[in-house]
Amino acid sequence: MTPELKEVATGLRFPEGPIALPDGSIVLVEIEGQHLTRVQPDGTIERIVHLPGGPNGAAIGPDGLCYVCNNGGFDWHESAEHGTRPIGQAREYSGGRIERVDLRTGRAEVLYEASDTGRLRGPNDLVFDRQGGFWFTDLGKTRAREVDRGSVCYAKADGSMIREVIFPMWTPNGVGLSPDEKTLYVAETFTGRVWAFDITAPGEIAKQPWPHSPNGGRLLAGLPGYQLFDSLAVDGEGHVCVATLANGGITVIPPDGGAPTHVPMPDAMTTNLCFGGADLRTAYITLSSTGRLVSMEWPRPGLGLNWLNTR
Image 1 (tube, rainbow, N blue to C red):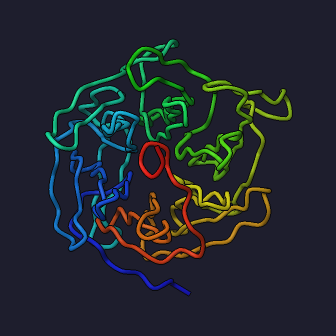
Image 2 (cartoon, rainbow, N blue to C red):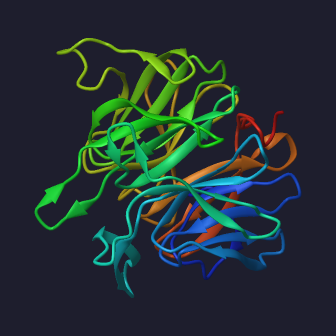
């Protein structure tokens, strides 16, 4: 049964990366539209700044600025039946990067374009820890006959340090932290898997050995059939809530790796969600192929995000 949804805004150009601000507005990216955008509670859309390439995941940092993963750009396909979807690396690909935006002025700057192992290819999603550093996924890019192997990096918000921590991964996309911040969760798109990594210190993990793990993580969950994972959010009880493509909706995975449940959405390109509103009981969800931001009451409070809901 489709949950009761409220349409918050429409006419967005492939929305992603929603952030529920304390004033009730939602800041999100429009990947195809190449903007960082604010949606007011009445649905009014305000473009904050044009970010060429492919602005993707977004999060508020310890300085109150908005940090944006820019994937460098996609080519796009649009049809009346299926809406808008990305179809690979843009012909005018501008390179992957992490950008930082002042939401008050719209001033944007590039913070990182490379890690300690080379140029960033397609940064996708990020999450800040209590120490003020952030984990982010570099999904890589897909071209006609080749695909990049992806990675997960850790960086400081002041621009002083970035390093690759996890490699290789197959299209790492959503990333989040457990409530106690002892576990890092990473969703892979094309495998339909979520991996859990044991954090030992800021930016450090204890890797599981090969052949039991291909990337140092523990397999938390995998989906049967053709279902793809996109970005994720963690709720206050530690459930990993992953936006799911093809079988459009939100897949909810218990922290113990128990059987997932599926919350269906009316868009095969359900790409991300965040929690906001009173007690963080409202889920804001991006339905990207149809260009909509919707909301619904969530059965549990969301997990407060560092530097946004908690200081």
